[in-house]
Length: 228
Image 1 (tube, one colour):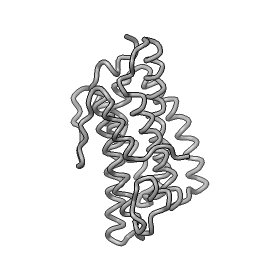
Image 2: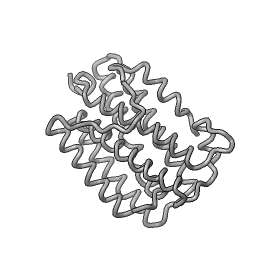
Image 3: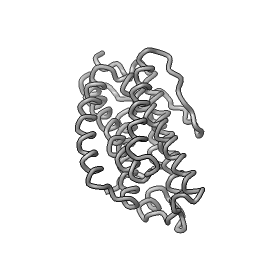
Image 4: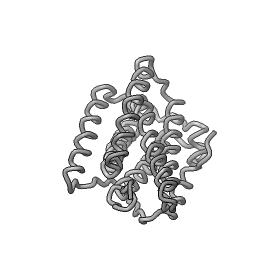
């Protein structure tokens, strides 16, 4: 069941401290520390692997990557929930923001899976990568929440670039601009005659929100301090 609309995700950010400034354009965070540089390198290598595996099969690329993209918000929300219980204090809106992110990425998966069904190899890849990514991200958030959020921020930058490339292929006629699915029209409030291009544009806007949220969270000392 889809419980959240895309617009609600942005509304919930109004309750978050520190305030998140959203940028509606392509933006790349410049690494300032060794931690940032390590995070960006991890994402860069992951993006190269995705390029090798999927090339211009962006529908299938979206399905596999969204199964992974749904993980960080859930794990981050879990740790922030425990922190709030442990110190008996408010979470400053972080839990809802992170769970909204996880739900939003899950909907992206469901939307694009209606357009491109994953192959047997891709289903195996999903299970394999998700298993190890869950463990790695859990440990990363446990020991360095700042790095964890920075990694996600950089992942979102790559996701935006990937979807923008996908959008250009559709606009250039390389990929057919098929009608938007009913789920996409319902979730994003798209018009009845909406097409794949409208879905991709809506997805890019969502990913921009996740990018800005995670880079802002990575810069917040109080929110990323888990044991005091």
